[in-house]
Picture 1 (cartoon, one colour):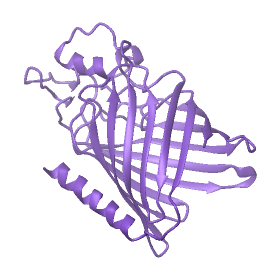
Picture 2 (tube, helix red, strand yellow):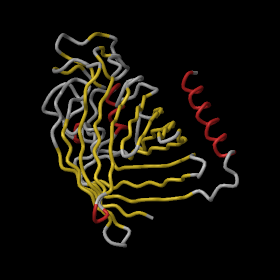
Picture 3 (cartoon, one colour):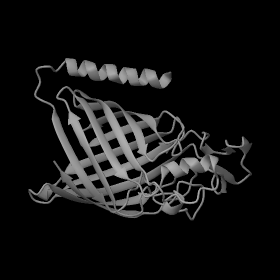
Picture 4 (cartoon, helix red, strand yellow):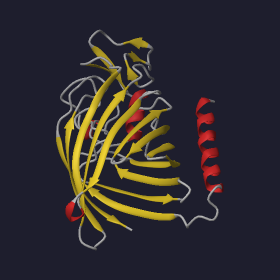
Length: 292
């Protein structure tokens, strides 16, 4: 019921914003197709689990894709501040098989029926003086998924080149617990030669116990042994669940390639800790995008 109230409130805000701008300029549509050398989700480059080494993509572990992946999306922005969008990415393992491993501990391959992440989002951007704000909702739907679809709220503020956001998960899923909140502090600044510099610091606050992540094997209802933690399909040795931790610092740039419609970019990612306090590796991330 709490989730439905949040969704209803955001929908009401969207309709109100649109009603206030009937005579405003036409809304804008934009789209993009991207090729990235890896898909790293919120700084987790090595493992989602409590210990090293990670299991890799063959074991349904981080990163989301350890090899080049296609990503794409479209955005609609109304002059009133209302926005809607869609973003998607290939994933180099199967969330369907990952969910099945929760009840069938003998899944043979996580490379069968690989998933595609689909993010549907909407919200409202407004301003109060020199300060901007945003409120929104994202729905995650995984093609070839299971126990992975959920909603996440978004609240944010901005001033000048700086921005801050908080995104809170509303349901236990195989990749997070209800109440987990991803906090970011970012900055973006255009410089010479059409280059845009950007930096993002990511931090997490966690709900320690959930259906798929914590210290209790919820298939059997038994607590994990001392020194082990539960993640999706069993108790594994390593770190205990944390209540918070910084996830990553990402610094990089993008630059359009003339008037071709293509943009290239590089990011250096300094890895922080995952939810079990396990240090993540540093990575260099590259992208080539076409906008339309």
